[in-house]
Image (cartoon, rainbow, N blue to C red; front, side, top):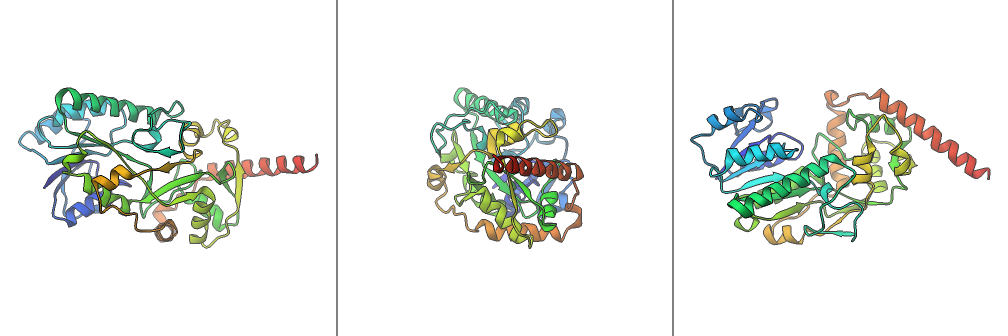
Length: 338
């Protein structure tokens, strides 16, 4: 089987690429080659995918069983892919997002039939627009699409957190190790679904070349439901620290101009999510989320602690966190005095 991945070395896609190579797929990664060594055995097509003419020339004599684009974020990129790959692949997979589901939810259980509507996050609205574009192509021209909607997926190089700054998770881990409070939305009791990329990969590969997945939108999400308190406590334990939460209402977080919490929080993380993966189980009967988050958290935090290049200090977010903690503690004191 022959596949082309646009991207292929990211948080989600690296594990998929490695699994395909181990299964004997003929895999080509079309990207800028910045992580060419991350997937030994894959072919490299080092190009900027936005240079449509160069890509078209490079693949003019090629045909693929599967093409998957992991880095399409706006409709123009999907339109480009349709032009490039129409007639050149038996399946085109677009990686959308579970954040595209309606906010607020009209029903607590999320299925593929749940309406798509997110007025709070442009990222999600663009994913919805791409899905609609591709579905039209499927219906009008037979372009063989499969849409995949991941929820919060992480790798051994990353860790899911409720709130962090622009430079990644390290500053939150560092705060935990220094005995400081960390910011948590609401009271930390909303449910969230996280998934390690190594569990995600077999489910995704099970959809590749699967004729029953053509024309379908399929969510691939974690099935271990955890509160943000449980997630953050697991991260703290993995870091050898005590979990000290500072609970902050989402509407308070949204007031800051320093960070854009409207999309990521109100449009995503502050909402309880319960996913029904029945369709995925029918299409990929072998799918199973094998590893509990607590185990994955230990692996990820250990990796981050042993790789200094991932320990990127974020003094701006640290100062922001300190200020919010002080404000919330002051507010609590005032309420106690009433």
